[in-house]
Length: 322
Image (cartoon, rainbow, N blue to C red; front, side, top):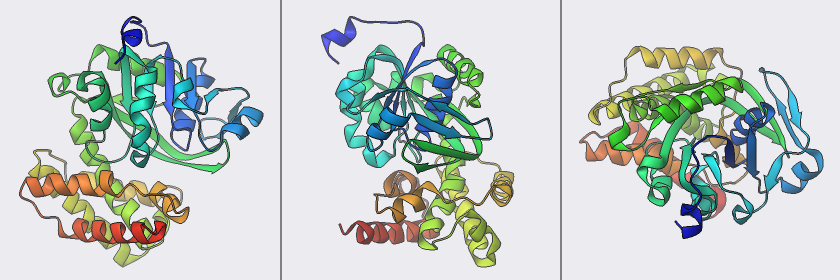
């Protein structure tokens, strides 16, 4: 990090940068800004629209609009902040180095809200493990138009320390972030075990993101079809076994809880299926490849997950003509 960065230490969590103003970053960043926090949004495809028309949020928490949010088209234009929220897909991480070097001072917290396993490693390689937190978002939200976010259901974030030496406890800075987010209406919950939270999220992400693409089906359609529902459950069992092989215990009841929660949720098109339909890269490696490699290294071969991974790799290449 540059000398210019190192000369500007701060102690309070008073400013935020949101990398990715889509379904996730637009919602959480919007709620933080709506509560009066200083939030700086990195906006790419929607910059002109948000500059002219603002950011619109529809949510069960209450609809609102930010008429003139602080937006930036390029990472180089962002200011230094106290918290950087990484809210874009892992497929955009090639731009992470420039964005973090621009926005981080020595005490900046980088909160990685991306899907998959060990997705914090890219940020940690830039700013150091000790400056990174990871969060799992249990959220149904879509970007339905330029600068227009529609939050449908849920919204909890479970987050924890990434650095090995900081795991096993809820840190002071986590408590401070929890208070700020909760005040803004965001259900941010600390955990002492980020890796367990990641694997528990994969219990849902692997079957429903993957099957949504290969079956061209939303959550309701998967749950209503007997074979599709059974396949989802079988994939969940494999994720639980893979987690156990990696030293992470997930209670058996978590599978039934996830199935029941999915049955009750509003019909939802997963983010992976929306990316696939739009011919954008899908997060195959972070959600499927990383857990598979961790499982193989631990001596477990999850056959159904492996087949789904191979299908998704093929579909992704063909879809983007790579």
